[in-house]
Length: 132
Image (cartoon, rainbow, N blue to C red; front, top):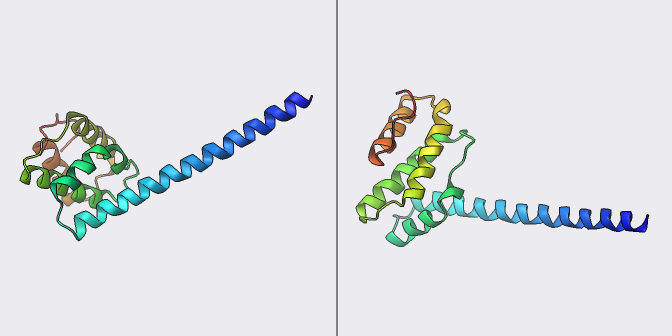
């Protein structure tokens, strides 16, 4: 019976460590998102910042949709600035954007969101995967 107690204690410790790691990851993701929003709003995106965004790209995307218009505008800003600096958007980033657009298509509520969806899809030459 002692081994059962020790195993329970080990499981509890593993669970605590796992929760702490998840909290740290969420905090880092939140910090990165805040930085991204700051860059897009206040600071002109530089070539280095766009490259950093490409490296961390999947963490930039949300699948919640509660701030869809804001995210679409950030996405468009990243795409336009990468064109300005003649940076090629990596295929994995394009694929991630395509998946994100597919996930978010049901969240479109306004004409502006609809137009941004279409513009992003067209700029990245993504297949048409949702209704216009």
